[in-house]
Image (cartoon, rainbow, N blue to C red; front, side):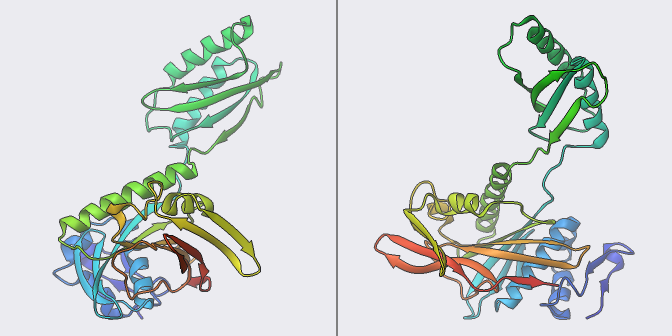
Length: 333
């Protein structure tokens, strides 16, 4: 399959490369940029386009057939049985970093000056905004240092937080040398933050699907670059709640859940969500992969099974359902 370029999308912008779309054909890519789709496609930024192309490729492998665009990131397909379902895609990019390097450097320098000869550790709880003025932080840190040195402060840890930054500070020791006093800054991206973002985007997409008039099943396909960096345990807690029991043996990992207020999947607002397809990859390396978590409480099954590793129901025990990992790990190019 050749690369596809169009002057309407920019003179050098390639919207699809063969390694990314091995599961698609020219027809599916033209389908995305045909006249009726063009305004919607052009409204997507490059990251959202990559997420859409990944989602389409997996859906194609899963047996989906062409459909129509309902809204940005909301695509309607026909499953293997000919029934309509919605695939909604979103790009969550890379884990957030510390912010612009120059802004982080200014913040670090201001804290370093305020702490004098103390060796310290910084933990940035959120990215430093562009153009941030570190003076308010420096004044607060200077007063904190004086309180420590007078013996008026218990311990050697403090938290500074305002509308712009959130910083955890720990002083370790004093030293005469003025070099090497900054030990480490921990990136400002926690698993819980990313899962919260996924949850917010899922609810927003469900609302967009409803606004588009679709009342049937939905598959949510968030895409990360280059990887999700989420623990499977954290994902299970959010999607399924706290398990009644778990087991891990030669037959693999299994867990038993029942519907509860702690489960996103069992919430009435998400009963039309068939599955979450977690896609991740690095287009620079021209490879990507993914896993899926299926909703055992979904009210509208889809004849379109994720073509890779998936956490899915294998037994029902009264009000409880047992899930296990099924299928083989897949990697696409």
